[in-house]
Structures are given as C-alpha cells and as structure tokens.
Length: 135
Image 1: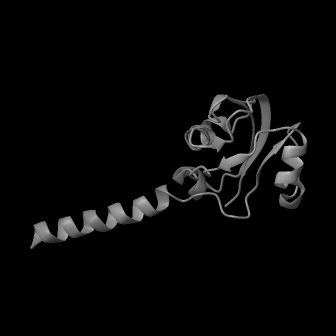
Image 2 (image 1 turned 45 degrees about the horizontal axis):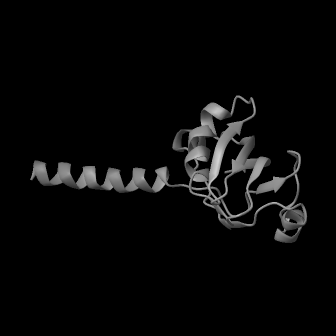
C-alpha cells in the first residue's frame, strides 16, 4: 500500500512539474526582428516590414520556455539579441547584449532560437531581436 502511494505521488509530482517546466511565452508576448533593438507593437513587425529590409523570411519560430523559477518569482523582462542566419537558413552566432536577465532567460532563448528556420539563400548578419518575457 505504501509503495503504491509513493508511486502515485511521484507520478503526480512528475506530471505537475513537467507542466510547469514547459510553460512557454504567452501569445501576447512579443518577439520581433528590427534593424535596431527597440520596442514595437506586434502589428508594426509584419512580414512585409521584414522583407522590405531584405531580411530572410522566417519560416519557423519556436518560443522559448519560461523558466519555472523565474515564473514563480515573477521575473519579467526583455533580452536584446543579435544573431546571424547562414546560407541554409539556420540561426548562427547568437549573442545576447549585456543584461542581468541573460542568466535567467538566456539558455531557454538559445535553445529555442537554434530551432528557428529562415528561407535559404538569403544569409544575413547582425540581425537584432528583442525578446520579451511576460507572465
């Protein structure tokens, strides 16, 4: 009986923690590509604005997981990021501009950006991004 109870509580804990660990940025959170890091509304960063500036078109954008500890401590903020896109459309050379939030959100941001894909044949250097984390 004790063994069954222990297994059940372990299973429940695992399910609850897994749900918290995969908490991602809410749809109203903004991530955007702009020529200079600045805050814009979602409507101001339409695909036409990006392609006019001769950026490669984004084909896949995965949002980073919201770190569990930061979520429960109510930590919010924005990261300014520079990155390159290679000839095959892969994100390379991700650099985060100095901010105390890099230690909090940096790793999840890098893991997500490594999955991003852009159209091939249009390499780009020093693209800027402001990633906002809001609960």
